[in-house]
Length: 192
Image (tube, rainbow, N blue to C red):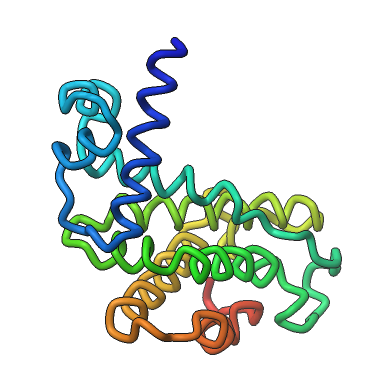
């Protein structure tokens, strides 16, 4: 990729994160372009839409939400929830979202929040599959599907609950919320 394009994309992403972190969920492409010091046309040429800007901004921000590998428990060993692949993946994401609370409160409660939510879900599912590979567990879900529709379903639900909590209760302790929501994630679901 051309260095000029890389600089423009980086400036736009960083500007979007800064604007959203200041509580600007309704920011438009003009506001993002101005904050980035580029033309509105450059933003559209590089991203195409505000949703793509927010997806890229969220992906960029998530780069520091990397799980610390937990113990490799044998599949089906009935280990504690703290030893599960889900726990290993979700704890750093929730810590990351706590650290960037205002950004996530802003983008996940905006009218067009789907792109940012999808970026968090994609990150969680990708990290979950990597952690399962590291543990030599089956990737995907108990239905045998490698793409893990159940994993995506659960991740979407968790991100949705976190988004709702941030919107409705700005002072919510996301770590406690995660503990409440994650109970039972390691238990097999009959019929899957």
